[in-house]
Length: 640
Image 1 (cartoon, rainbow, N blue to C red):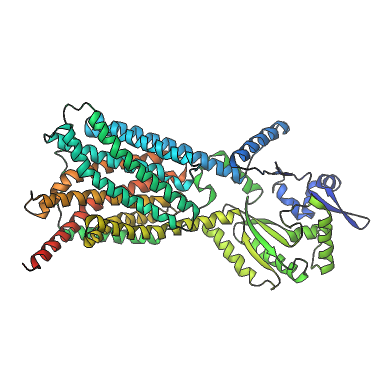
Image 2 (tube, one colour; image 1 turned 90 degrees about the vertical axis):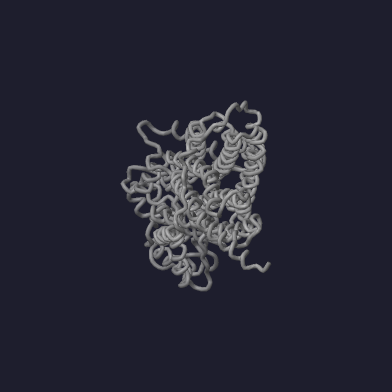
């Protein structure tokens, strides 16, 4: 514990024989009465509630790490409860408590959601594939991947931040999609009369290359985040890329190995076999429907709000949320908007201008109080009112200096070269907080040239960080799209095909943005990663279907490109429906989380899975057939 500040011990100034002296507030309160003593001294007001029925004391901790702070808080809480008089009610409020609650909710939500996903998959996959191996082998590959990835992160001393909530989902998506595609191809080959070893080989050759391409493409997209300006985004980028590549290598080893060792006696047919039929609607209908969807999504995109606030992640009935609401109702804002003041602290013109700025800022929405060096200067003079001259300011600053550590150092440096204004605010959103910063800049233009002010502090850093993370992710998403288009062109050895594949990958992101806006979900750190995840999922589906179509087209077994596409849809398209159905169930598993970001993540994951599936089953085939027709015409025009 670094400091404990209570109303009882708060130093106030009394004059004896015309000279100021510091005395504890409790002595003044005894002689003057608590209410009257507080009314005369503005700096004491934050310690007593508006109704006079509750008092606050402030405890400051200093420790090397988060664990030490939490341990110190628990000891302090226990000691405070043991000393509290009978019948007294204690409530604990603080930024560390809020952050700890969010971390606990995130950990519990991730464990519960991923655990529920695994349980759902273990039940759903045997039903779909009508075999235990169809469920157990992909799920085991996911669990092994998660174990390896998180073991590496622990070994490297990395922690999981709220921005990293997509990493477990990424492992599940990549692992299950690739695993289901491999199992599906194996079962199809085995049912066609091939031996078990030949069926495993065909699964590796036909699906393994597509899985490699999808993993490299998705990994490349996440690796592009390494150029981001924000450390947390760069950290997420390499963690996600690591998760993708590790999951691919685990799946490509564990699934074929499991199928080889499993005592397979007869092929199992999934429940969609013989029932799954996807036709090829007229391209005009597909493109018209796509245009309508885009038209509906665009207004939603325009409504997207990049915003966040501290308590949005925590349920209203959580103890820390109830205590904070109670505190802010009775005492005022708990959060701090900090302003550093440099230069001219003894200048009466500067002093008056700073007080004017404080008055202007105090009238802004959400600002409930302040603590400033100007208040301590007036307190040192007996809380005098009216303009102050330079001798008065100098005398007050001299008194503060010789008083040593009894005056708080939070608002004035020891050498008195810099001062600080601390505004108490409610739980403002990022937009409101940054607007407050901008308003400070407007008021600061009226200050004398001798003084400068700058907004600072952890709360401002957190809100600026939120805005930076979102803008950085948008920029990185654009870079990822360009990199993926180039990579697809390289993989398929065709620039035109690479560009054709880009639209079905853009469409789910656009739909996701539209739904995000229509539902009023603010774009913030906890959910912005769903866009990178959605892009990876869309690319995964696209590569599998394009690879299957090109294989069928080159096989020479079909009379035309439309038949080749129908054959690709009958096999790979069916696998896409299976994996997407599984992922929708996985997304729904997040809806039970108490952490708002995980809940919203589940909603948006479900949306992007359905959108990616629709784009790949209807839009992509229409585009591929147009591309194939153009390729055919180009071949016919070449001279013999």
